[in-house]
Length: 195
Ligand SMILES: [Fe+2]
Ligand SMILES: [Fe+2]
Image (cartoon, rainbow, N blue to C red):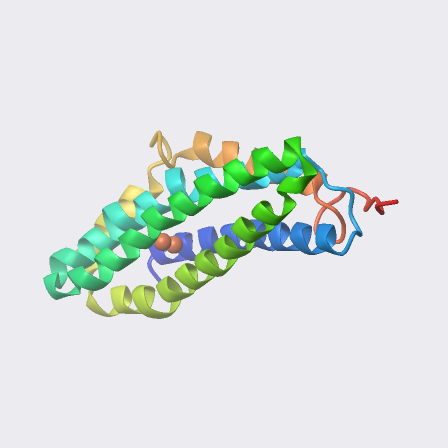
């Protein structure tokens, strides 16, 4: 299995874990079982806004999908669609960030935050599923050994300012912070029932 595919799957797993945390928070707040921690919601949104944008999508668009386009230009339409989803996801996250900021100032902002969070959860899970089910198997089928060598080398560059080791540590720290603040059973914080 090419390293690049393993890296992309691992990053999808990381994104899915933070999405599960967001879904858990929304459910707990809705059920009145958790006193909302705006620091946690802000950290979750920050992670979702930065990790795919800065770290994950460039790997897909600039290396993996670019190589697929070169091998099979007729895939352009399909790959354009996935790229458009990256752009749309960015817009949805900007709404989620604004909704979270407004909710942190006024509890009446809950409905807007919940709507934005649920819309993004459905959208991003579907997007990753499409990549896992359609695009990664297609890449394995059509790319040649020399393509994988080039892509794997790009992914492995530890000094790369975009996805090198410093950047990896930065996101790991953010995930640690999310886990510290997240309500159990996902995170380590005690659940505080709303009076
Ligand atoms: Fe993607
Ligand atoms: Fe992806």
